[in-house]
Image 1 (tube, chains in turn cyan, green):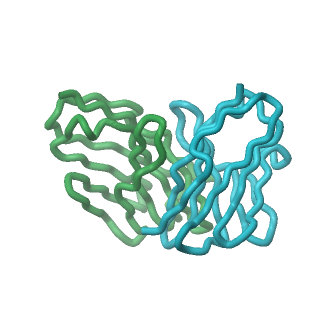
Image 2 (cartoon, helix red, strand yellow):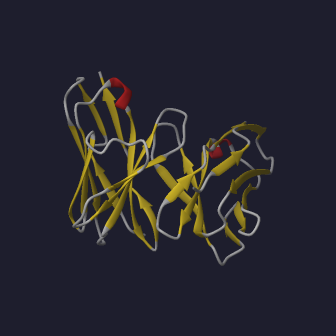
Length: 112
Length: 111
């Protein structure tokens, strides 16, 4: 099956700093990638759709200025959490479609 | 907007028991439905994928069914083992490539 990687797998940062998470499709190209967030003991929630060559599409309630998405190439999408606060601490997962959705291993963000 | 519901939220069974996890969705216009397993603090492991034109898929001790018209899917686990303990997520992929997840069923299989 197709492989999607994420980096970093785990990050701890101070409140007010920005954190960048990378999502890569390793063996296929993806014009679209998806970003999800999962709070403890809750299910995954779609945050936004990352589109190569155009602006990301955000789900209702997700602040686009706080969660910056850049689909830099056909194999890379980045999610930047700007001015992170403790309430942004969560598990972030990306996915890319190739027939079906393939998920990255996730990034656990802890904001102190 | 598609809504996905999973019942029960948690389930505890003794080892060896057969069990059924339920998933329902509100919009039957789906591309496919997928069952995932998630271990604590880990990412997703895809278990079974059912295309909208299919009725069921089987893999080992797992069997998933899909009734698109009624908006339901079930995941059947035969002869459960302690290693099956995890959270099981049902996800529906819409025709515009958006995936919606249920809240999951937290399964505990006791030795």
